[in-house]
Length: 545
Figure 1: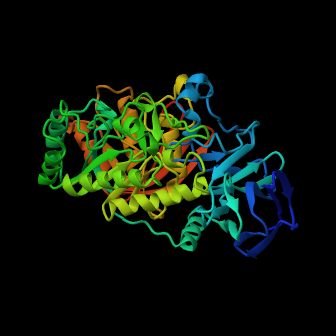
Figure 2: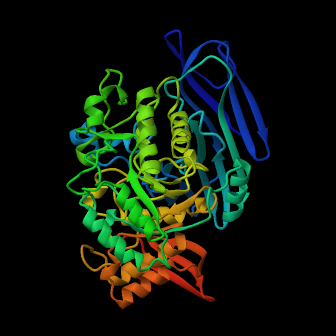
Figure 3: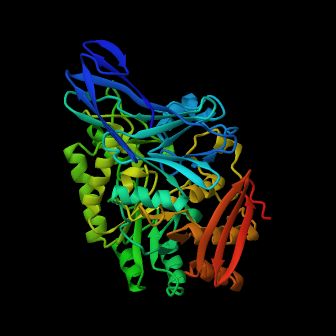
C-alpha cells in the first residue's frame, strides 16, 4: 500500500508537522500483505495534535463507501459519490443545542464533517464496494485512540486517522494497527474477526418484551404486571421481559425507586418474571446523571468537566444530563454497588445499558477518547460479571466481545417517515429509516461481534402510526436481521391475525440470503420454510412494492 504519513504535535510551546523522521520523533513501520502497524518513537515529550496516513484510491462511478457511524444510533450505510453525509443539525448548532450538549451525542467535536458530496468518514472500519468485491479496512486496536477513516471520492483518496487529542507521548506509542483485505462480503468480515480474535459471547437470541415503545417513562407496577401476564401466556415463543426507563426517581439515582409507580420495589417484579420462566431485564444508563438527580447535585465531583471546571451537558434527554467520570474512585464504587444491587439483590438477569457514549466525550488523564471507551467497557463487564448486557448508545468496536447484544441503529419511531424536526437535531435522533439502514449495513456484526438488536417490531393498532402492512413488513425485517426480537405491546390485546404474526416473527424458520439497495429501494431476499421470497420497499417513506 503506497501511503504518506502526516503527524502534528506540540513541543516546547511550538506546533510542528512532519511526514518523516526529525529530531523529535521517528517511526517504526510494520507493513505486511494484510496489515499496517505504525508506532511512534518519541525522543522528547510531545503533545499530539493529529495523525493521518493517506493513500490514493481509484473510485469509480459505481463505487460505494461504507461509513460506520460513531455510536449505536448514528446513521450507517453505503454512500455513493453523489450523496452527502449529514452533519449536526440546525437545532444542534443553536444555543439550545449547545446548552444541552447535542454536539457530544456524535462525533461532531473531534471529526471533520463533510462539506461536499462524495466526502465521508467511518469509525473503526470501512470498505469500498465495487460490484460484489469489497476492499476492506479495519482497526485492530482502538485503545490507542479512535480510528476514523475518511474517503474523498472526488479526489480519489482514503485517509486513516487517529483521534490522539489531549495525550502526551514520551515513549513508544502504537498509533495505528490496520488490517486490510479484499473479497466478498462474508469473506472479508469473517477474515477480519478471525484476525481480531473476537467471537460473540452468546448465540442465543432474546425474544420478548420491552416497555419503552408504548409507555416510555410512564410505566407502573400495574402496567408491567399486566403486560407480563399477557406475555407469559406466550412463553413457548419468548424468553425475556425487560423493564425500561421510568422506574427510578431520576436518571443516575438507580436505587431510588419511584414508590408511586412501583410501591413494592423492583425485586418482586423480577421474582414475578422468573415465576413465568422468563429472564428479567432492566434498563439503566450507568454513565449518565440528569441535571436534577441527587447524584448530580450531591456528587458534582463525579461529573465530567470542561477546562473551566464546569460539568459538561451530554444530551437533552430528561431535561439534560451529564456524563459520569468512572475513573473517580467513589463514582466507580457507586456504579459497582448499583449493579450489585440490581443483579444480585433484585435478581435481574440482563441489563440494557444506554447512553454509554457519555463517559468518553473528552480525553482525560492522558487517555484518548478511544482508550476511555475501551476501559469503560472493561469496567462495565467487570461490574456485570456473567450476566447479560444489551448495549445501546455506544461505540461499536470497544464493545466487540464485551456485550452480548447490541443496538446497532437509531430508536424506531412510532411511524415511518423521518420528520423535519428530527432531521434538524443530529444524526443520532429517533428515525425508522435510519434504524432500517443500520440493520442492513451493520449485519456484518451479527453473530461475529455480538447479536444485533435492530429495535422493536410493533403490532398493536393504537398509539401507532404504521399501517398494518408496514408493521408486517417490519416484523419480517427484524426477524431476518435481529438477535434481539422485542415488542412493546400488551400481547393480550392482539387479535388472532396479530397473534399469528407475533408467533411467525419469533419462529426460527427463516434465513437471510441477500440484501441490495437501489436508490431508496431495499431488496431483502430470504428463505422461509423452504420457499424463497423478497421484501421490496422504500426505506424513506415505507411504500411497499
